[in-house]
Image 1 (cartoon, rainbow, N blue to C red):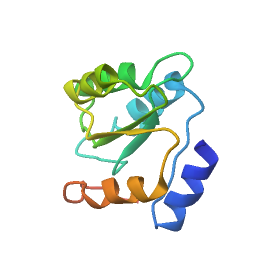
Image 2: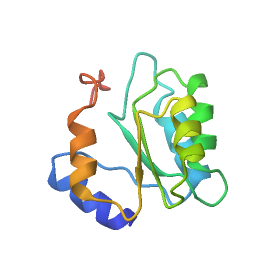
Image 3: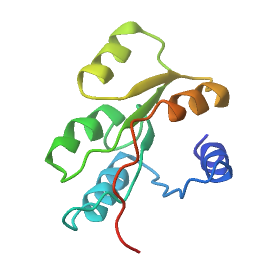
Image 4: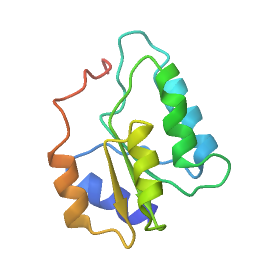
Length: 120
């Protein structure tokens, strides 16, 4: 799934940084956001169910970051409680598996304005 999403997002013009689990994702976010006034990622697309830390855990840790990009969470557990909890913790959107790339594209088009990027 991660490979498919990475290919699709790259095809849409996004630079993609991949993480294999929740711990790596949070570490990547924290190290990339350590520079002041820097938003190294425009959006985070993550599964909710990951080894180490869940997508909900990562989402809860974001308020301590200097920047907070929109987060899109994907879940295979189609229950309203999961969607409600994700939105309560600040997710921009939740999508269900099997993931429709059309739905993902629609959510990406609704993202708020561009986030200030780090200088190259």
